[in-house]
Image (cartoon, rainbow, N blue to C red; front, side):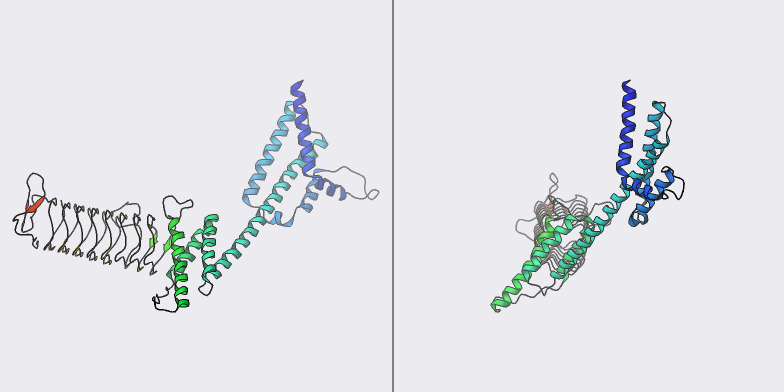
Length: 431
């Protein structure tokens, strides 16, 4: 019958595979038999096969068989035995001595094959790790300041490629790159310095700029291999004039860093806002004077006592940010969102705040003298002991029940402020 023919073929195929997998095992088993004439001749038994197989098994495969391989062996053994028993059950045949030996050979051969593959995999893994360790060590040495700038530049890119290729090296590579940026930067020798000294300074500066470009490229939304979830320790680093535009700096520690004149347009410093406490990048003590922060996301960021004088924060997100005693004198905050921000005793003197959103913000003791506050939204804001001398409040939204600064009146229809006396252009101090 066709079913009988098919089942017989299955048995023959299993026997063929078993013989192929364990040819060396059988040869060794036959070699282990007593010589002719010393003892009675006998056939190869299951015990002979197992003994021969144990002799042929490589030492590394016997000592380094892991739980995963043992589990694979058990499952494979059960499957092979179940299939063979099922086949013989369907064909109503009982196992002969030769078939019993073939079954043992097939099972042992499969285990032998898997053990050899495991040894090979482990060997290749160890060899790869050794090569990568040597590669990493060489790159670290070549980033030394005693190396020519061209060598350091090449190793910056090589380090970044290693981080992209090997995930378990990624944080370590980033730590090395950030560590380079934390090293003291060479002072600008000035345009009148000798040409060689000037070239050395510019070359060293280019290495630092390249590291920032590489890091920033991995922190942007379109990064092929993103580094946004990795820690960036940039404490005290000189990052003045660097370009971090559109970067996600939520995991960056910029405590004490110099970001003066840096380009931080559309940069994100905020983490996922899950509580009322500030989260995201650390900026304690950072210098952001005259930095470009147009559209930057600083929501919930702790900017306490930071120097943001003259910074461009137009359209920036500062929702729930802590700006206590921060210096924003002369800064551009046009259209910025400071809703529910804590800006107690903050200095906004001479700042441009036209159209800014200060809803429910705490501006207690804030210095808003000679500032452009036209069209700003102050509904629900707290102004206890704040100063608004000589500021332009034209068109600012103001709560009706609250006080109205001297020299200004609130339009009952629009809720916006306008000057009480056309001849008086000064706002007064609020208490």
